[in-house]
Length: 115
Length: 112
Image (cartoon, rainbow over all chains, first blue to last red; front, side, top):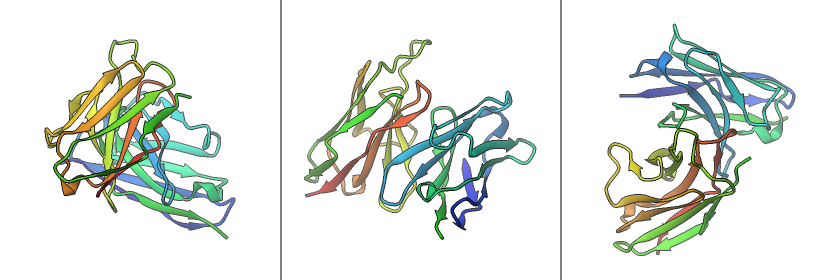
């Protein structure tokens, strides 16, 4: 069974930084691209970023480009999202998702950017 | 960016009756490999989204056969043949053909 467990969310002040993690299990992690998708409170879904399995390819939404960095450690089956220069509009539940075509989702971790 | 437009945004339905959600894209979703990467997701209240349909019309494992997807190019439809109480939630279309990936606004399905 595929499991994706996000962690690292919390309250952070505007301009601050936070690193999210996603622990993956139940599949061969290194062979799958992984994404972050977010959902602001009461709003729809927004794709944030993707990283390939082993080639290092990454892509970002314009809204986070230059501020967020996606990475992974295949030896630890873990996906990361380093977030910096955080803004109020980054407040959302952040979901870890598997594959180029978003097959599986984690339960999400809430990031709140507020003073 | 590819804009995904869903309609309606709210869909009250009677139990046992059919329901239909439309999704249109601002560009063709046909990829260079010939596949059309249009997906449908369901988000029940208080839950994470789950994928129902991929490549327009393929149901994911465990998805009831009352859910079906159709369409081509830029126009797509999700149909529920007979709505059940567990189908309440928000449904999103999403394209994974182009970068950046984009979602529709979501359609809220509720029981009348």
